[in-house]
Amino acid sequence: MALMDFIKKQFVDVIHWTEDDETTLAYRFPMQDMEIQYGAQLTVRESQMAAFVDEGKVADVFGPGRYKLTTQTIPVLTYLKNWDKLFQSPFKSDVYFFSTRLKVDQKWGTPNPITIRDKEFGAIRLRAFGIYSYRIKDPKSFHLNVSGTRERYTVDDLSGQLRSTVVGSITDLFAESQVPFLDMAANQDEFAAQLKAKVGEGFARFGLELDGFVVENLSLPEELQKVLDKRIAMNMVGDMQRYTQYEVASNIGTAAANEGGLAGIGAGLGAGMGIGQAMGQAIGQAMPPQGAAGAAAPAGTKSSQDAMALLEKLHDLKTKGVITEDEFNAKKAELLSKM
Image 1 (spheres, rainbow, N blue to C red):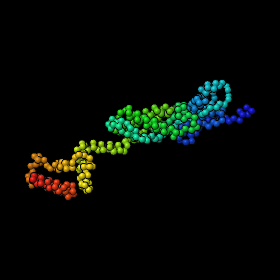
Image 2 (cartoon, helix red, strand yellow):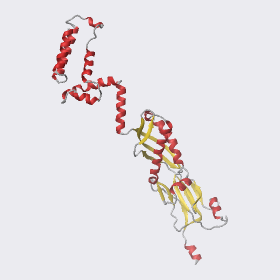
Image 3 (cartoon, rainbow, N blue to C red):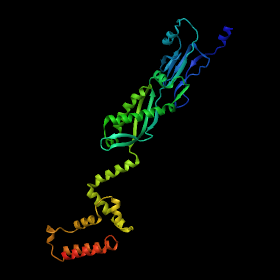
Image 4 (tube, rainbow, N blue to C red):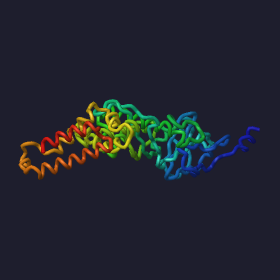
């Protein structure tokens, strides 16, 4: 009876794996109750590696090539079983294949802004995203730490862990480098190179090799970006006084057309500077300085023409409701007294 049972057993004499999808990282060869025939052929393709696992222990790892499985080709397994080299019995072990092809276009990003301390802005929240590529480099480490005894382990099974590794590395890198956000954003290639080195350390613990890493964008949340845009605009305009004058000049026409006239400008600017003062400064700059080189023009010519032109502008402002009747009359009397 024992002899008949032995004869009925199925033996595997060819072991190979043709990858049928793009996402499988590790694949266990289907054995069930079958046993590997002594002298069977193992084929490992260029984009693969294979491992023999016996009683939970990785016996040996095979790179690309074709192998005849004997006790000579699996010395570690031979030692575990204490087989005699002349013993021609079949043996039973699990065979795992690992895809070593590059897994490209893997996306990473910060699902929520991460809070970091910036040298220029203080505490800020940062968003970042990009792509990376990796491959299995150490099948034994990957089997022991990641895929285990599962029949199939895919890219999707691992993507969450890898994204978390990337985000954690970004936080650590900013804390260690002390490089301001603006400098990082302006030198994304250099930042990506530093981040690749740091992320690669985490990938190596899983038996993986990080091949490429790209930072596509570094940005602040929308509300913080608006604050940064205002700061940039103020730096371009100059100091606060010039910025206020610029805002008055830009909004005076709009305010005149709205109900409430110039009252809306003061609220919009949020500054303590009165509209009358700003208008007075603008008018004073338009008037020729007394005692200046150009003040020697004869009466009735240049100074009179300037005064009349200014009166016309003031009258137009009064008509539009920008200034009151009293303000117009006061300025009119002042100008006429100087003519």
